[in-house]
Image (cartoon, rainbow, N blue to C red; front, side):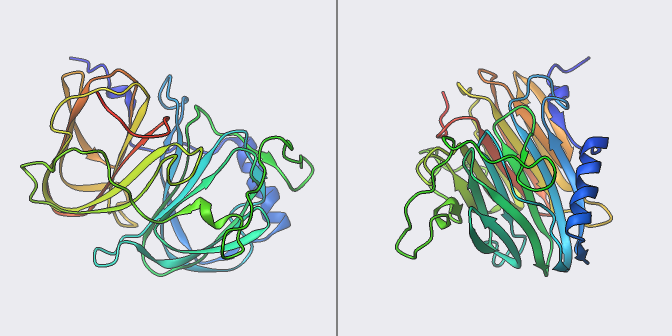
Length: 314
């Protein structure tokens, strides 16, 4: 029997196109990268992977190393909002990255050392982004509520200035920074749903985003399930917005997509067993839930993203 939503579950990445490889090569000529940081491209979601998907996301692991010169990104802007995120993996201190990321937002340099979501409003110049120091594995990603990624370069032959009406820098905050407010490092309460009666898991909510934490932002929420059993959203429900659910096992450099435990989710009364790290596109009005974690022996990062300012269900 063919399951209708199997095509909405993505468990791999995609290869870069020839044009993308050419852009990377051009950037490396301008700013040669001297780095020992090892990484794995893990997952990719857009409408080339899932027809009708309204999200772009690329997920990566950074395993360790240092960057002494050069950068992994150059200045650019988008005509859509984007989030760049970094999630720490230490069960004892999950809010700490044990790493140092350097990113330029507008004309300010920021160093990221905590698990965070960096909200990039449409039209805001951002990058270079440099993984300066990675002392333990970390999960990182780029994400946008749009069907396919695109950008406008601010360097090289195709440099184009951002449209003046797209983004106006806010006034300085009390520290004198205009852009620090876009770096979100804390979670916020997620609705009023009671904890599952089947909760025997060790769980830590890491960080979340919505229009309250950064005006104009879309919704995203990240949680580590370290071990045990857990049922999330025990009652089936729908949303009036598209949603994406991410399930990422704490893999290794040799087995980066590994999930050690039993994960399953229902989509329109069809039960799907998730055997490896995956992104799941859930179109609006699709009945889904519960999401079950059973016998989790190795940590699983669970996250939900919605193309809506705030989370809600019905």
